[in-house]
Image 1 (cartoon, one colour):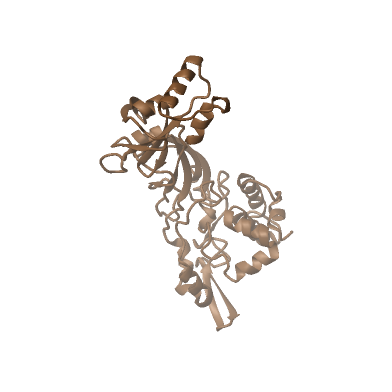
Image 2 (cartoon, rainbow, N blue to C red):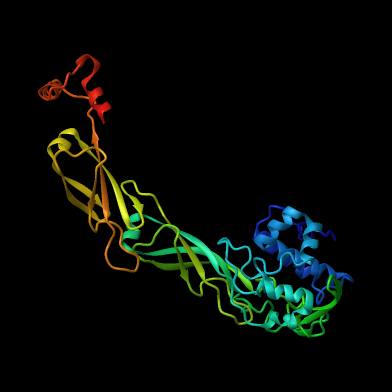
Length: 388
């Protein structure tokens, strides 16, 4: 049996997680030592299980593809992947499409202690209740939705406790046997030489995952993992004023916990789409307002768009291009607070490109009355545009 994990499962190197899990179920049913008559079934089953655990963990699979089989195995033996992404029985929460944040598992200091001194009974970690992994997804919002606040419905694909076996990984009527590898203790002990001398290391039994028991059958729905990937439709309340890049948390909507532990959380990254009319800076909004040359000269009352309607702005006579006016309270609402930011309107005087004869003569007369020497042949309006 090939050592390469892809060959062990009989899948291609670009196989999806579902394809890997499906291949694992077939191989596990074939080589499980409690049901197979092959003399080396136990060794083959261990390889199949290890291959599935690595290739359904995004971080470990990435490292495996980069290092290759031998270097990956060496790095893992040195403890290079302790406390990494995933962890936990049957790979719960691994390979999720949300870039899930770690939830459960020991600290790096505990892992180092386990490597050299046996972890002080660290093998029992397999039986402790542990919280499931946090998962992550993203929701896109329009500025108008952020302004008002909105209830948003979305669909995620996430690990769920297997409904067929209720997360056990085996049928309820399966025969229970004492694990032959750890003799029912849930832990295995190895002795090895280290730079600190000869030490004994105790760890969770890899065959029974610390339960001390094996079963005559595996669940056909989850392949013994205790979890399946299911679609879930959820609703989240988006508070008014939330900003691009902020994160909402839905408690208990992440991956299922282990050994009776609570579910992880679902983290929702907020992405606010760009707006055609406004630019946002914190809770303030900015709007560019083009006005005609006469309005800039004589002043005018103009209608300004706001996120939820419009308001009037007085443009004083003699306004220059680039001047900025503030409209108090017409910006975005303060998140979980009272009031709004402001709306800033930046004026841009537009120079006309096409005039009829009457308009042209009027502007030339205006220029002459001001004592300006206008060379009409070179273009009066080109000079006006240059002046801006």
